Length: 265
Length: 223
Ligand SMILES: Nc1ncnc2c1ncn2[C@@H]1O[C@H](COP(=O)(O)OP(=O)(O)OP(=O)(O)O)[C@@H](O)[C@H]1O
Ligand SMILES: [Mg+2]
Image (cartoon, rainbow over all chains, first blue to last red; front, side):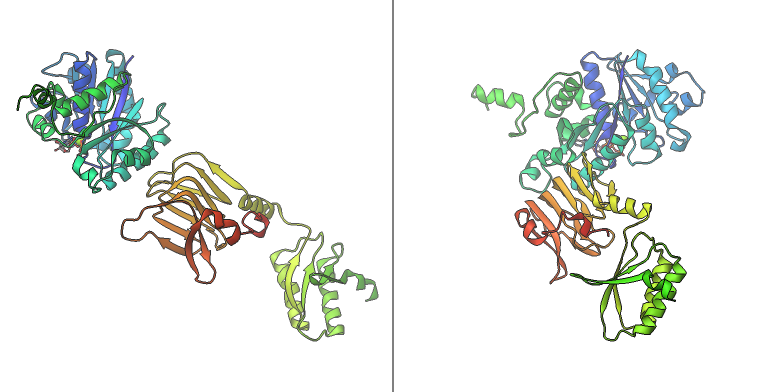
Protein backbone atom coordinates (compact mmCIF):
# COMPACT_ATOMS: atom_id res chain seq x y z
CA UNK A 1 0.00 0.00 0.00
CA UNK A 2 1.53 3.27 -1.13
CA UNK A 3 1.95 6.49 0.76
CA UNK A 4 0.59 9.81 -0.48
CA UNK A 5 2.53 13.01 0.04
CA UNK A 6 1.27 16.47 -0.83
CA UNK A 7 3.82 19.12 -1.83
CA UNK A 8 2.57 22.53 -0.82
CA UNK A 9 3.78 26.01 0.13
CA UNK A 10 1.10 28.66 0.43
CA UNK A 11 3.11 31.15 -1.57
CA UNK A 12 3.23 30.73 -5.33
CA UNK A 13 6.31 30.14 -7.44
CA UNK A 14 8.58 28.80 -4.71
CA UNK A 15 9.20 25.49 -6.44
CA UNK A 16 6.37 23.06 -5.65
CA UNK A 17 6.11 21.74 -9.18
CA UNK A 18 9.88 21.56 -9.67
CA UNK A 19 10.26 19.73 -6.37
CA UNK A 20 7.44 17.30 -7.14
CA UNK A 21 8.99 16.41 -10.50
CA UNK A 22 12.46 15.98 -9.03
CA UNK A 23 11.54 14.02 -5.92
CA UNK A 24 9.37 11.83 -8.13
CA UNK A 25 12.26 11.26 -10.53
CA UNK A 26 14.69 10.60 -7.68
CA UNK A 27 12.33 8.07 -6.07
CA UNK A 28 11.90 6.36 -9.43
CA UNK A 29 15.69 6.24 -9.81
CA UNK A 30 15.76 4.40 -6.50
CA UNK A 31 13.38 1.82 -7.94
CA UNK A 32 10.14 3.04 -6.36
CA UNK A 33 6.81 2.97 -8.18
CA UNK A 34 5.69 6.58 -8.24
CA UNK A 35 2.58 8.39 -9.41
CA UNK A 36 2.57 12.19 -9.63
CA UNK A 37 -0.74 14.02 -9.52
CA UNK A 38 -1.01 17.60 -10.75
CA UNK A 39 -3.89 19.26 -8.89
CA UNK A 40 -3.18 22.74 -10.21
CA UNK A 41 -6.31 22.78 -12.35
CA UNK A 42 -6.23 25.46 -15.03
CA UNK A 43 -2.50 26.10 -14.57
CA UNK A 44 -0.98 22.73 -15.24
CA UNK A 45 2.83 22.69 -15.26
CA UNK A 46 4.04 19.37 -13.99
CA UNK A 47 3.73 17.71 -17.41
CA UNK A 48 5.90 20.42 -18.97
CA UNK A 49 8.64 20.14 -16.38
CA UNK A 50 8.66 16.38 -16.95
CA UNK A 51 8.58 16.83 -20.73
CA UNK A 52 5.36 14.84 -21.03
CA UNK A 53 3.02 17.52 -22.35
CA UNK A 54 2.62 15.92 -25.80
CA UNK A 55 1.58 12.58 -24.41
CA UNK A 56 -1.47 13.77 -22.49
CA UNK A 57 -4.79 12.38 -23.70
CA UNK A 58 -7.07 12.51 -20.68
CA UNK A 59 -6.72 14.39 -17.43
CA UNK A 60 -7.77 14.40 -13.79
CA UNK A 61 -11.14 16.04 -14.46
CA UNK A 62 -11.93 13.47 -17.14
CA UNK A 63 -11.35 10.75 -14.55
CA UNK A 64 -13.37 12.45 -11.84
CA UNK A 65 -16.28 13.11 -14.17
CA UNK A 66 -16.18 9.58 -15.48
CA UNK A 67 -15.19 10.35 -19.07
CA UNK A 68 -12.35 7.85 -18.91
CA UNK A 69 -10.83 5.17 -16.72
CA UNK A 70 -8.14 6.15 -14.26
CA UNK A 71 -5.65 3.84 -16.02
CA UNK A 72 -6.06 5.50 -19.40
CA UNK A 73 -5.42 8.99 -18.02
CA UNK A 74 -2.06 8.04 -16.53
CA UNK A 75 0.90 9.17 -18.65
CA UNK A 76 4.02 6.99 -18.53
CA UNK A 77 7.35 8.75 -18.14
CA UNK A 78 9.80 8.53 -21.06
CA UNK A 79 12.67 7.51 -18.84
CA UNK A 80 11.15 5.25 -16.20
CA UNK A 81 8.45 2.63 -16.46
CA UNK A 82 7.74 3.09 -12.80
CA UNK A 83 6.99 6.83 -12.96
CA UNK A 84 3.48 7.93 -13.96
CA UNK A 85 1.73 11.27 -14.16
CA UNK A 86 -1.92 12.10 -13.73
CA UNK A 87 -2.09 15.51 -15.41
CA UNK A 88 -4.32 18.40 -14.43
CA UNK A 89 -6.95 19.78 -16.79
CA UNK A 90 -5.91 22.93 -18.52
CA UNK A 91 -9.32 24.26 -19.43
CA UNK A 92 -11.68 23.50 -16.55
CA UNK A 93 -11.74 25.48 -13.35
CA UNK A 94 -10.76 24.08 -10.02
CA UNK A 95 -14.18 24.39 -8.43
CA UNK A 96 -15.25 21.33 -10.38
CA UNK A 97 -13.06 19.23 -8.10
CA UNK A 98 -13.90 18.34 -4.52
CA UNK A 99 -11.63 17.10 -1.72
CA UNK A 100 -13.70 13.93 -1.61
CA UNK A 101 -13.11 13.19 -5.29
CA UNK A 102 -9.35 13.61 -4.94
CA UNK A 103 -9.10 11.49 -1.84
CA UNK A 104 -11.12 8.75 -3.54
CA UNK A 105 -8.80 8.89 -6.51
CA UNK A 106 -5.69 8.68 -4.34
CA UNK A 107 -7.13 5.71 -2.50
CA UNK A 108 -7.67 4.02 -5.85
CA UNK A 109 -4.03 4.59 -6.83
CA UNK A 110 -2.45 3.56 -3.55
CA UNK A 111 -2.41 -0.23 -4.07
CA UNK A 112 -0.47 0.15 -7.32
CA UNK A 113 2.28 2.54 -6.19
CA UNK A 114 4.88 3.01 -3.47
CA UNK A 115 4.54 6.79 -3.50
CA UNK A 116 1.90 9.18 -4.73
CA UNK A 117 3.11 12.77 -4.89
CA UNK A 118 0.47 15.47 -5.12
CA UNK A 119 1.53 18.82 -6.60
CA UNK A 120 -0.57 21.47 -4.86
CA UNK A 121 -1.58 24.83 -6.36
CA UNK A 122 -0.57 28.05 -4.60
CA UNK A 123 -2.95 29.62 -2.10
CA UNK A 124 -5.09 28.32 0.72
CA UNK A 125 -8.42 28.05 -1.05
CA UNK A 126 -10.30 25.27 -2.81
CA UNK A 127 -7.29 24.01 -4.79
CA UNK A 128 -5.23 23.62 -1.64
CA UNK A 129 -8.05 21.84 0.16
CA UNK A 130 -8.44 19.43 -2.74
CA UNK A 131 -4.74 18.62 -2.85
CA UNK A 132 -4.42 18.05 0.87
CA UNK A 133 -7.51 15.87 1.14
CA UNK A 134 -5.81 12.79 -0.26
CA UNK A 135 -2.51 13.11 1.57
CA UNK A 136 -1.01 11.00 4.35
CA UNK A 137 1.99 13.28 4.69
CA UNK A 138 2.96 16.76 3.61
CA UNK A 139 6.12 18.46 2.41
CA UNK A 140 6.12 22.23 2.78
CA UNK A 141 8.36 24.19 0.42
CA UNK A 142 9.77 27.55 1.44
CA UNK A 143 12.47 29.78 0.03
CA UNK A 144 14.71 31.73 2.43
CA UNK A 145 12.60 34.85 1.96
CA UNK A 146 10.54 36.21 4.83
CA UNK A 147 7.26 36.30 2.94
CA UNK A 148 7.72 32.70 1.84
CA UNK A 149 8.45 31.56 5.41
CA UNK A 150 5.35 33.42 6.66
CA UNK A 151 3.19 31.61 4.14
CA UNK A 152 4.84 28.28 4.91
CA UNK A 153 4.09 28.89 8.58
CA UNK A 154 0.47 29.64 7.73
CA UNK A 155 0.21 26.45 5.70
CA UNK A 156 1.78 24.37 8.47
CA UNK A 157 -0.85 25.77 10.83
CA UNK A 158 -3.60 24.75 8.42
CA UNK A 159 -2.04 21.33 7.86
CA UNK A 160 -1.94 20.76 11.62
CA UNK A 161 -5.68 21.37 11.66
CA UNK A 162 -6.15 18.76 8.92
CA UNK A 163 -5.05 16.23 11.50
CA UNK A 164 -2.54 14.42 9.28
CA UNK A 165 -0.96 11.51 11.03
CA UNK A 166 2.51 12.99 10.59
CA UNK A 167 3.81 16.51 11.11
CA UNK A 168 4.72 18.19 7.81
CA UNK A 169 8.31 18.08 6.53
CA UNK A 170 10.23 21.10 5.30
CA UNK A 171 12.21 21.60 2.11
CA UNK A 172 14.05 24.90 1.73
CA UNK A 173 14.45 25.76 -1.93
CA UNK A 174 16.50 28.33 -3.86
CA UNK A 175 19.16 28.87 -1.24
CA UNK A 176 21.74 31.52 -2.05
CA UNK A 177 24.68 30.91 0.20
CA UNK A 178 26.25 34.35 -0.15
CA UNK A 179 22.98 36.12 0.68
CA UNK A 180 22.49 34.01 3.78
CA UNK A 181 26.06 34.78 4.81
CA UNK A 182 25.59 38.49 4.30
CA UNK A 183 22.35 38.52 6.31
CA UNK A 184 20.16 39.44 3.35
CA UNK A 185 18.21 36.19 3.52
CA UNK A 186 17.06 34.03 6.38
CA UNK A 187 19.48 31.25 7.23
CA UNK A 188 18.53 27.58 7.27
CA UNK A 189 18.73 27.56 11.07
CA UNK A 190 16.46 30.59 11.39
CA UNK A 191 13.86 29.05 9.09
CA UNK A 192 13.91 25.68 10.84
CA UNK A 193 13.70 27.34 14.24
CA UNK A 194 10.72 29.44 13.18
CA UNK A 195 8.78 26.68 11.48
CA UNK A 196 9.85 24.03 14.00
CA UNK A 197 9.21 21.05 11.74
CA UNK A 198 11.64 18.45 10.50
CA UNK A 199 13.96 19.55 7.70
CA UNK A 200 13.85 17.08 4.83
CA UNK A 201 16.32 18.83 2.58
CA UNK A 202 17.77 22.01 1.14
CA UNK A 203 18.20 22.91 -2.54
CA UNK A 204 20.45 25.60 -3.94
CA UNK A 205 19.24 28.27 -6.27
CA UNK A 206 20.77 26.74 -9.34
CA UNK A 207 20.64 27.43 -13.06
CA UNK A 208 20.85 23.69 -13.67
CA UNK A 209 17.37 23.32 -12.21
CA UNK A 210 15.90 25.88 -14.58
CA UNK A 211 17.80 24.52 -17.56
CA UNK A 212 16.67 20.98 -16.88
CA UNK A 213 13.03 22.02 -16.50
CA UNK A 214 13.30 23.95 -19.72
CA UNK A 215 14.32 20.79 -21.53
CA UNK A 216 11.63 18.72 -19.84
CA UNK A 217 14.11 16.55 -18.04
CA UNK A 218 14.17 16.99 -14.24
CA UNK A 219 17.62 17.78 -12.89
CA UNK A 220 17.45 14.86 -10.47
CA UNK A 221 18.06 12.62 -13.46
CA UNK A 222 21.57 14.02 -13.96
CA UNK A 223 24.34 12.04 -12.30
CA UNK A 224 26.23 14.50 -10.11
CA UNK A 225 25.20 18.13 -10.05
CA UNK A 226 24.67 19.66 -6.63
CA UNK A 227 20.96 20.02 -7.27
CA UNK A 228 20.48 16.44 -8.42
CA UNK A 229 22.32 15.12 -5.37
CA UNK A 230 20.14 17.28 -3.12
CA UNK A 231 16.94 15.87 -4.63
CA UNK A 232 18.20 12.32 -4.48
CA UNK A 233 19.15 12.86 -0.83
CA UNK A 234 15.60 13.97 -0.15
CA UNK A 235 14.30 10.82 -1.82
CA UNK A 236 16.61 8.70 0.32
CA UNK A 237 15.41 10.45 3.45
CA UNK A 238 11.81 9.78 2.41
CA UNK A 239 12.75 6.11 2.18
CA UNK A 240 13.99 6.32 5.76
CA UNK A 241 17.75 6.55 5.26
CA UNK A 242 19.55 9.11 7.36
CA UNK A 243 21.59 11.24 5.01
CA UNK A 244 23.49 14.25 6.35
CA UNK A 245 22.75 17.67 4.84
CA UNK A 246 25.09 18.61 2.04
CA UNK A 247 27.47 21.39 2.95
CA UNK A 248 27.48 24.47 0.77
CA UNK A 249 30.75 25.76 2.10
CA UNK A 250 32.36 25.75 -1.28
CA UNK A 251 30.87 26.00 -4.67
CA UNK A 252 33.04 23.34 -6.23
CA UNK A 253 31.61 20.20 -7.71
CA UNK A 254 33.00 16.84 -6.77
CA UNK A 255 35.06 16.64 -9.95
CA UNK A 256 36.84 19.93 -9.20
CA UNK A 257 37.69 18.65 -5.76
CA UNK A 258 39.11 15.42 -7.11
CA UNK A 259 41.09 17.27 -9.72
CA UNK A 260 42.50 19.54 -7.03
CA UNK A 261 43.50 16.57 -4.96
CA UNK A 262 45.33 15.16 -7.92
CA UNK A 263 47.05 18.47 -8.47
CA UNK A 264 45.23 19.13 -11.73
CA UNK A 265 43.64 22.46 -12.62
CA UNK B 1 -42.77 52.96 61.00
CA UNK B 2 -40.82 51.73 63.97
CA UNK B 3 -41.16 48.05 63.02
CA UNK B 4 -39.17 48.70 59.85
CA UNK B 5 -36.35 50.52 61.54
CA UNK B 6 -34.07 47.50 61.70
CA UNK B 7 -34.01 47.00 57.95
CA UNK B 8 -31.04 49.27 57.85
CA UNK B 9 -28.10 49.16 60.26
CA UNK B 10 -24.91 51.09 60.26
CA UNK B 11 -21.45 50.07 61.41
CA UNK B 12 -18.18 51.90 61.59
CA UNK B 13 -15.27 49.75 60.40
CA UNK B 14 -11.63 50.21 59.41
CA UNK B 15 -12.87 50.82 55.92
CA UNK B 16 -15.24 53.59 56.94
CA UNK B 17 -18.99 53.41 57.40
CA UNK B 18 -20.73 50.28 56.21
CA UNK B 19 -24.50 50.34 55.85
CA UNK B 20 -26.05 46.89 56.05
CA UNK B 21 -29.29 46.38 54.19
CA UNK B 22 -31.70 43.75 55.47
CA UNK B 23 -31.98 40.82 53.06
CA UNK B 24 -35.32 39.38 54.23
CA UNK B 25 -37.73 42.26 53.70
CA UNK B 26 -39.06 43.25 50.30
CA UNK B 27 -36.92 45.53 48.20
CA UNK B 28 -39.61 48.20 48.25
CA UNK B 29 -39.74 48.40 52.02
CA UNK B 30 -35.99 48.57 52.07
CA UNK B 31 -35.96 51.47 49.67
CA UNK B 32 -38.75 53.20 51.56
CA UNK B 33 -36.96 52.94 54.88
CA UNK B 34 -33.77 54.19 53.34
CA UNK B 35 -35.59 57.22 52.04
CA UNK B 36 -37.22 57.95 55.40
CA UNK B 37 -33.99 57.51 57.33
CA UNK B 38 -32.11 59.84 55.06
CA UNK B 39 -34.87 62.45 55.28
CA UNK B 40 -34.90 62.36 59.07
CA UNK B 41 -31.17 62.35 59.59
CA UNK B 42 -30.27 64.80 56.84
CA UNK B 43 -26.65 63.73 57.29
CA UNK B 44 -24.55 66.68 56.35
CA UNK B 45 -21.05 66.70 54.95
CA UNK B 46 -19.75 64.58 52.13
CA UNK B 47 -19.20 61.21 53.70
CA UNK B 48 -18.34 58.07 51.80
CA UNK B 49 -20.21 54.94 52.69
CA UNK B 50 -20.14 51.33 51.63
CA UNK B 51 -23.43 49.52 51.21
CA UNK B 52 -23.75 45.83 51.97
CA UNK B 53 -26.75 43.95 50.63
CA UNK B 54 -25.84 40.77 52.56
CA UNK B 55 -27.61 37.74 51.09
CA UNK B 56 -29.80 39.74 48.74
CA UNK B 57 -28.84 39.86 45.10
CA UNK B 58 -29.32 43.38 43.75
CA UNK B 59 -29.77 43.64 40.04
CA UNK B 60 -28.65 46.61 38.01
CA UNK B 61 -31.97 48.49 38.37
CA UNK B 62 -32.11 47.97 42.10
CA UNK B 63 -28.58 49.25 42.53
CA UNK B 64 -29.49 52.34 40.58
CA UNK B 65 -32.64 52.87 42.66
CA UNK B 66 -30.62 52.74 45.86
CA UNK B 67 -27.91 55.02 44.56
CA UNK B 68 -30.47 57.51 43.27
CA UNK B 69 -32.28 57.60 46.59
CA UNK B 70 -29.06 58.29 48.45
CA UNK B 71 -28.11 60.92 45.93
CA UNK B 72 -31.46 62.61 46.21
CA UNK B 73 -31.80 62.79 49.99
CA UNK B 74 -28.25 63.18 51.23
CA UNK B 75 -24.77 64.28 50.43
CA UNK B 76 -23.41 60.80 51.04
CA UNK B 77 -21.51 59.09 48.27
CA UNK B 78 -21.61 55.36 47.74
CA UNK B 79 -18.10 53.99 47.47
CA UNK B 80 -19.25 50.50 46.56
CA UNK B 81 -22.02 48.00 47.05
CA UNK B 82 -20.90 44.73 48.58
CA UNK B 83 -22.81 41.53 48.79
CA UNK B 84 -22.37 37.96 49.93
CA UNK B 85 -23.96 36.71 46.73
CA UNK B 86 -23.29 36.90 43.00
CA UNK B 87 -25.02 35.22 40.10
CA UNK B 88 -23.71 32.04 38.58
CA UNK B 89 -22.82 33.92 35.42
CA UNK B 90 -20.78 36.43 37.36
CA UNK B 91 -19.06 33.65 39.28
CA UNK B 92 -18.26 31.87 36.05
CA UNK B 93 -16.93 35.08 34.55
CA UNK B 94 -14.67 35.65 37.51
CA UNK B 95 -13.47 32.08 37.31
CA UNK B 96 -12.80 32.41 33.60
CA UNK B 97 -11.00 35.70 33.99
CA UNK B 98 -8.78 34.61 36.85
CA UNK B 99 -7.51 31.23 35.68
CA UNK B 100 -4.48 30.43 33.54
CA UNK B 101 -5.21 28.86 30.18
CA UNK B 102 -2.30 26.78 28.93
CA UNK B 103 -1.57 25.60 25.39
CA UNK B 104 1.38 23.61 24.20
CA UNK B 105 1.89 24.49 20.54
CA UNK B 106 3.38 26.93 18.10
CA UNK B 107 1.03 29.82 17.33
CA UNK B 108 1.68 30.17 13.61
CA UNK B 109 1.21 32.97 11.10
CA UNK B 110 -2.48 33.75 10.67
CA UNK B 111 -3.54 31.88 13.80
CA UNK B 112 -5.28 33.69 16.65
CA UNK B 113 -5.15 32.15 20.09
CA UNK B 114 -7.71 33.88 22.30
CA UNK B 115 -8.44 33.19 25.97
CA UNK B 116 -10.20 34.64 28.97
CA UNK B 117 -7.86 34.97 31.90
CA UNK B 118 -4.10 34.51 31.64
CA UNK B 119 -2.60 32.84 28.58
CA UNK B 120 0.37 30.54 29.02
CA UNK B 121 1.85 29.49 25.69
CA UNK B 122 4.37 26.67 25.86
CA UNK B 123 5.89 27.15 22.42
CA UNK B 124 6.67 30.00 20.07
CA UNK B 125 4.38 32.71 18.80
CA UNK B 126 5.57 33.12 15.21
CA UNK B 127 5.53 36.34 13.18
CA UNK B 128 1.95 36.95 12.07
CA UNK B 129 0.54 34.83 14.90
CA UNK B 130 -1.60 36.45 17.61
CA UNK B 131 -2.30 35.75 21.28
CA UNK B 132 -5.14 37.59 22.97
CA UNK B 133 -5.97 37.36 26.69
CA UNK B 134 -8.17 39.32 29.07
CA UNK B 135 -5.38 38.81 31.60
CA UNK B 136 -1.62 38.40 31.31
CA UNK B 137 0.27 36.61 28.57
CA UNK B 138 3.23 34.39 29.33
CA UNK B 139 5.16 32.83 26.46
CA UNK B 140 7.54 30.01 27.31
CA UNK B 141 9.24 30.36 23.96
CA UNK B 142 9.87 33.07 21.42
CA UNK B 143 7.31 35.82 21.12
CA UNK B 144 7.65 37.08 17.56
CA UNK B 145 4.05 37.78 16.64
CA UNK B 146 1.40 39.92 18.31
CA UNK B 147 0.41 39.70 21.96
CA UNK B 148 -2.59 41.58 23.33
CA UNK B 149 -2.93 41.39 27.12
CA UNK B 150 -5.71 43.01 29.18
CA UNK B 151 -8.00 42.73 26.19
CA UNK B 152 -11.02 43.98 28.17
CA UNK B 153 -9.15 47.08 29.25
CA UNK B 154 -6.98 46.12 32.21
CA UNK B 155 -3.76 48.13 31.89
CA UNK B 156 -2.23 46.31 34.84
CA UNK B 157 -1.63 43.22 32.72
CA UNK B 158 1.77 42.23 31.38
CA UNK B 159 3.22 40.27 28.48
CA UNK B 160 6.24 38.16 29.43
CA UNK B 161 8.32 35.95 27.16
CA UNK B 162 11.44 33.77 27.30
CA UNK B 163 12.53 35.59 24.17
CA UNK B 164 11.00 38.92 23.28
CA UNK B 165 11.00 39.89 19.61
CA UNK B 166 7.38 40.81 18.86
CA UNK B 167 5.71 42.40 15.84
CA UNK B 168 3.48 44.25 18.27
CA UNK B 169 2.51 44.32 21.90
CA UNK B 170 -0.85 45.60 23.01
CA UNK B 171 -1.96 46.06 26.58
CA UNK B 172 -5.57 47.20 27.03
CA UNK B 173 -5.84 50.02 24.47
CA UNK B 174 -2.12 50.80 24.31
CA UNK B 175 -0.11 49.62 21.34
CA UNK B 176 3.61 49.44 20.78
CA UNK B 177 5.21 48.03 17.70
CA UNK B 178 8.67 46.95 16.70
CA UNK B 179 10.77 49.70 15.13
CA UNK B 180 11.08 49.84 11.34
CA UNK B 181 14.75 48.93 11.41
CA UNK B 182 15.94 45.40 12.13
CA UNK B 183 16.33 44.72 15.83
CA UNK B 184 17.54 41.74 17.74
CA UNK B 185 15.18 40.29 20.30
CA UNK B 186 16.16 39.91 23.92
CA UNK B 187 15.83 37.04 26.34
CA UNK B 188 13.52 37.03 29.37
CA UNK B 189 11.68 40.31 29.20
CA UNK B 190 8.21 41.55 30.00
CA UNK B 191 6.12 44.43 28.74
CA UNK B 192 3.89 46.60 30.92
CA UNK B 193 2.15 49.95 30.83
CA UNK B 194 4.18 52.54 32.68
CA UNK B 195 1.56 54.56 34.53
CA UNK B 196 3.55 57.79 34.42
CA UNK B 197 4.49 57.75 30.74
CA UNK B 198 1.26 55.97 29.74
CA UNK B 199 3.31 53.87 27.37
CA UNK B 200 4.23 50.26 27.00
CA UNK B 201 7.75 49.61 28.20
CA UNK B 202 10.01 46.57 28.26
CA UNK B 203 11.91 45.48 31.31
CA UNK B 204 13.97 42.46 32.27
CA UNK B 205 11.92 39.69 33.77
CA UNK B 206 13.64 39.78 37.17
CA UNK B 207 12.08 43.21 37.82
CA UNK B 208 8.53 41.98 37.41
CA UNK B 209 7.97 41.61 41.17
CA UNK B 210 8.96 45.20 41.75
CA UNK B 211 6.83 46.60 38.94
CA UNK B 212 3.77 44.36 39.31
CA UNK B 213 3.83 43.04 42.90
CA UNK B 214 0.16 42.07 42.73
CA UNK B 215 0.36 40.27 39.41
CA UNK B 216 -0.70 36.95 40.88
CA UNK B 217 -3.38 38.43 43.11
CA UNK B 218 -5.99 37.45 40.59
CA UNK B 219 -8.88 38.70 42.68
CA UNK B 220 -7.54 42.19 42.21
CA UNK B 221 -8.75 41.70 38.68
CA UNK B 222 -12.05 40.85 37.14
CA UNK B 223 -14.10 41.90 40.17
N1 LIG C 1 16.25 25.35 -6.94
C1 LIG C 1 15.92 26.18 -7.93
N2 LIG C 1 16.86 26.92 -8.53
C2 LIG C 1 16.53 27.76 -9.54
N3 LIG C 1 15.30 27.94 -10.01
C3 LIG C 1 14.31 27.24 -9.45
C4 LIG C 1 14.56 26.32 -8.38
N4 LIG C 1 13.37 25.78 -8.02
C5 LIG C 1 12.43 26.33 -8.81
N5 LIG C 1 12.99 27.20 -9.67
C6 LIG C 1 12.30 28.00 -10.69
O1 LIG C 1 11.30 28.78 -10.05
C7 LIG C 1 10.16 28.91 -10.85
C8 LIG C 1 8.93 28.46 -10.10
O2 LIG C 1 9.03 27.08 -9.85
P1 LIG C 1 7.77 26.14 -9.80
O3 LIG C 1 6.93 26.30 -11.01
O4 LIG C 1 8.26 24.78 -9.46
O5 LIG C 1 7.04 26.77 -8.56
P2 LIG C 1 5.57 26.44 -8.02
O6 LIG C 1 5.65 26.59 -6.53
O7 LIG C 1 5.10 25.14 -8.54
O8 LIG C 1 4.75 27.61 -8.66
P3 LIG C 1 3.13 27.76 -8.66
O9 LIG C 1 2.78 28.29 -7.31
O10 LIG C 1 2.86 28.73 -9.75
O11 LIG C 1 2.57 26.39 -8.92
C9 LIG C 1 10.42 28.09 -12.08
O12 LIG C 1 10.82 28.94 -13.11
C10 LIG C 1 11.54 27.16 -11.67
O13 LIG C 1 12.36 26.80 -12.76
MG1 LIG D 1 3.23 24.68 -9.60
